[in-house]
Length: 122
Image (cartoon, rainbow, N blue to C red; front, side, top):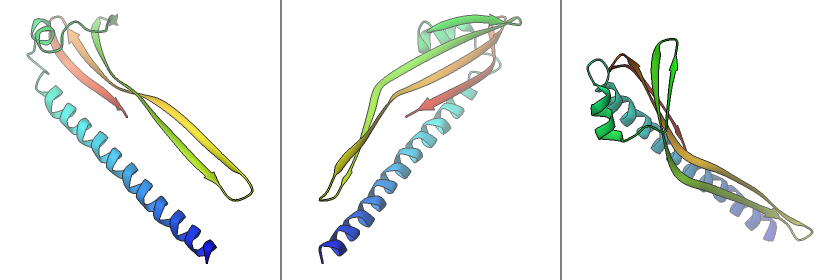
């Protein structure tokens, strides 16, 4: 009977955890859609001064083949995860952690935005 309970617990736990992972991925996808829509409005006519007033000073500026690139790095801290396992003979755990951030790039030709891209890491 105990084995059956353990199996049921493991199966239910895996469904719950996989559901949480799906929700997290949906949130990341939604952030990506939001970025795509909002960043698209800057392309074509937006000038550097407008971006400075909206986003502040970029984290990094560089010039590559005549195109100026502004990078904004937005840090949201660190996420950690612990998976514990075991039975009556042994126990163990796996741990992992990762940084949560967004990176936004604006590409300029002169004073106008010609391209944008982003990366969402959760």
